Image: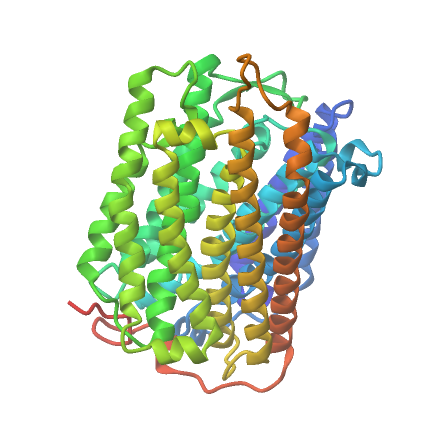
Length: 551
């Protein structure tokens, strides 16, 4: 890794690491009586370790100019490995939390192991750790090949990857210490939020600089989705996390917003985090890896562009459907509901476009588990977006809100859509990145697929049943006009579904472990495949290979 950096890039890496170390030291000293002091020490250690890592090979020979004739894939390789590490950790914590809901004694008496602290550890690990690293790694891979240009330098991608994982580490360790803003998908405190902004700006600049140097005149649709993911997430993150810290030596901060404005801002962020982090970015992934794996052009390139603009515009207005029957003005609730229904059109256009791309390649879906991951992801994307629009209807929401139906909906998208397309993309790209003919074991990919699908179906159906029963029990009245069931009655009724949910999560975790094992064996085995022309940036416009539209 270090040997690929030029001497000036090594100097810059040491300087950046030194600045990070000093910031960590100052945070540690200022917050020595506060949990932020622990994070200051963690940042300081991370900076020092990076200095030693770079300094160890500082005098190694500089890379030859021949490197410029190859794509720079080292950050993508590291990102995919980190994604697999995060998903194993995140799923394990998630299944632990699921078993806690069936047996509360599984906290073992520790405050750090309570549901309230472990639950955000799970969500951050799988969404930002797994999903985020998968998006960063694949975006670097796709960006280079669809623009036929190498990344602009070798240091900034590593800054993004390492800095992003430092943010994830700060977030997860902070939750265990009780550091949280108590905002859904935005729990990290002010100092971690500021650090992520710095990392994210560099990430966006990498994209702009690479596209400015592209040899391909057309900007392929995947890059549209990736850039929307980067740009809009930055805007959402900054606005929702505007806060005033108690002091520079305290982790605690107070939001700039309060009351119903705070709720509206949070769910404008929360729903659009689903839109642009968990949808747009992964659609970019799908629009590259699915046609490449199937060996088919996108069914309709025009539809991919139209659905991009539809998703980008409609999603922005839909967040208020999370706040039906609250103090939010009725017209704002109705606006969110209306745009949620309209959102079904571009969402289904994307799902249908993906499935129609497989026309003429269904025999490959039958025989290739990697492509089947992607196909099932497209199906779940279509199902989940329909369900989301349906649940946004106010009368339906009166039954579903605050129940496990919402949990089932979220995990249909998270497991069936996000995880499936990511695993499929990882299985497709790992042999390409490490120059292997194929994954180490096709049978292990097959086993992972069926375990993941079985786990998802069990989980989602358990939560659908649980949620609808909850909603019905909570709104059932007896002849005297009082509630027919107590809240405890509904908990007792939920118990078998909670056990089923934990079993489904366990199956998904086992499948991910098998996948990580298969990836590791693919990387470490010595047999390499031949280099292909498509793995080299074009020296001039018109050279190279990129996915071509069907129309």
